[in-house]
Image 1 (cartoon, rainbow, N blue to C red):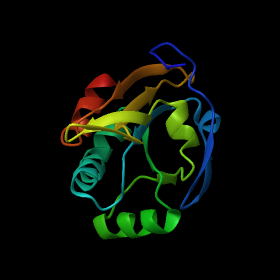
Image 2: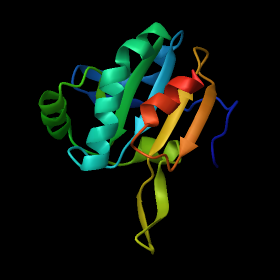
Image 3: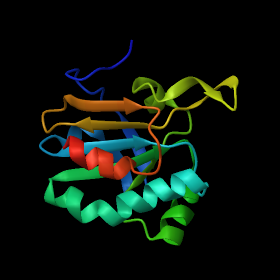
Amino acid sequence: MALDVGDAAPDFTLPGADGDVTLSSLRGQTVVLYFYPRDNTPGCTAQACEYRDLRPKFDEAGAVIYGISKDSLGSHDKFTTKYDLNFPLLSDPDLVVHNLFGAYGEKTMYGKKRMGVKRTTVVIDPDGVIKAIKSGVRAKGNAERTLALL
């Protein structure tokens, strides 16, 4: 079942550096979830740094940002420290939440089909309803394009 604009965002709890984060506990705020393949890769680093740099604009819009990948909390900690990231990264090693939001599945890379993380961005309104969901997004410019959706 694919999620679409207007659907209730499925609730989840994932670990982050400051403890578990439960989506339903964020009601009353606009939530940006961005799913990315891997810490410390060129595209993912560019994407994370863009969210870092634009964080004040997300704050002004009343939106909180969460990056989600299958990487461990240890990997996230190193990535956050190395690039001075100013928003939480959540760990989904079993890809449960990735699958809930359609951020994992078959994709084509270099002409070959394989299973993998689909770079996906989801905007959830303060009532927990999906306002925007974009799959297969480009890393560069993703944060700027997401701001325009708020």
